[in-house]
Length: 489
Ligand code: PLP
Image (cartoon, rainbow, N blue to C red; front, side, top):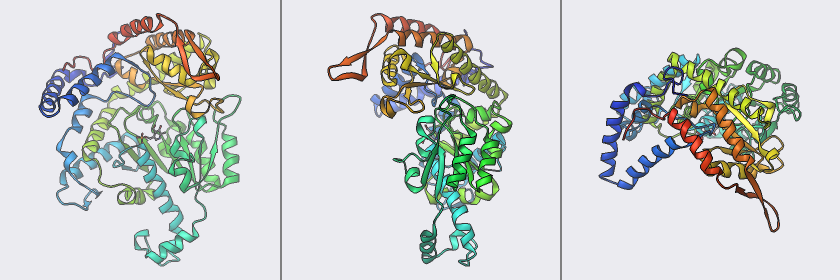
């Protein structure tokens, strides 16, 4: 159960001593101005070291990535694009942005990469507007005597607005595992587009490509969005592209969750979205293990429009974060990252098997990516009760809807679990089998509380001694797989 620095690619183990000195110095400087922030920063590391983190969208970036963000690039405005900035003195930002984009192109085999988006949501907004700018206006440009959208007058824009007909978007529904930016009504994507969702097969929980194709033929969307936040299976992007081509839609893939598995060559061929999608968006901080941020990869016909993310929907780029993206992408190009990505998927398999052999129910009956979606109704619990009871025992997860969830999006019936973070610590398949055992132990010892006006979906009782027993068992796993080994503050 000891961490294997090669397969787990324990980030920063090889320069832990230098990183320790850097962090100690940084905290001392912060302490001299606002000691409470220095204290909270120390405590955050201690808390992260002491908890069993199974949040599927989180990870632990390397000290190199984290330290890169604490630089003077934070102070520089650089609106515009490489070599064409609205501010003077951006030569070093140009270097940073060029390197980050080059690493992204090389890593993902993409013709074009835009590394400015501040987050995944921003990356999706850039992509939506770029697709609209390319798709909706381009055929009209010639009629208006313009070569480029930037040549249009106010009157031209007015006429285009009046003609906008097809602004339809087809994305995966939230309760099947899609993200709120994929057309969820309260999100801007559900307001700026006429939206329709595709779900999963009610019997198997798997994506039903025939149903997606049928919905696409009926709805004739401008954009089909593929990708997910809580779907525990791989997607065939070649098939999604065929569906998009048949109805003349642009295929946009949001690989925010599984970008690390694409980078690490676990998802190849039809499962690699980049060659199949017209536009691919991602976050950089989940399985990709970089800084918090977003990125857009595009085929050549969309790259000019994506390149105008600023000023279209973005302001000044976070140059210090773009620098950290470059460092993280350089790490992801190392062979050790491929070993890490394979281990992420193997560990998810071990976690799923661990649940199945203990008779727990999983959405789709298992996993073949980094996510396991546990349906907790067989324990008589809501997702909310399960999430809270697990947290009491030191296991950090998040509640999540299951398809057609009877408990709705707030209380839910599921718990979403992911393997990227603990895999970074060095956890292997045996450790994840033990994690499944501990989770089943907690849920089996949790009883829902009946409220006076009927069953409460939030209250529960954890049997005496459970939290202490699980904390002790987790501590053994955590000590055997230390976070940032050798890093001392
Ligand atoms: N897209 C998907 C599929 C996601 O899962 C998420 C985050 O959970 C996002 C986009 C948004 O990312 P961010 O929180 O960086 O805006």
